[in-house]
Length: 196
Image (tube, rainbow, N blue to C red; front, side, top):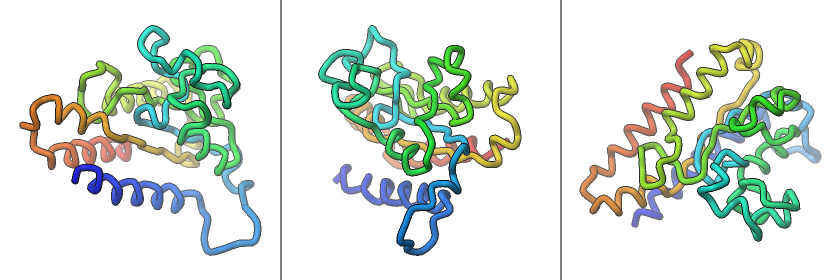
């Protein structure tokens, strides 16, 4: 039953992402040039994390993760690409720089930044990773420090990709939390993203 509830949310999230890409109707070829160079800001969990999880915590830094892409373990919870990589490709840009490497990859800043961390969720959960609120706070700090301009923000797309960690926390807590609470907190987090 819980899995069935997630399907409409994922479909809605994908629809919103496609809606923001400027793609309208059916065309015989792609129009990636419309998105080229426009920043992508990613928030979420292991489905979107491209290297923010600490090396001592996760198996994503060991083989077989990353063997197919990027040809070595790189902090992705996949042997290949994760959601962020596919979305960046759709936009015609490189995957945004993981927040963890913000001081070392300044040349990648025009592509945005990835704040997603494997094991995170909307709430503080079992894995003690930066939850969605902390990720948004990191984003706000980058904006406050002038890393991203008002023009960058106006041209950007923000993506929230949260899967099952909150439900796992809910289950581990004995199922005593109100399920609607998850929806309310997620809505508040998204509202915080929209507020300058």
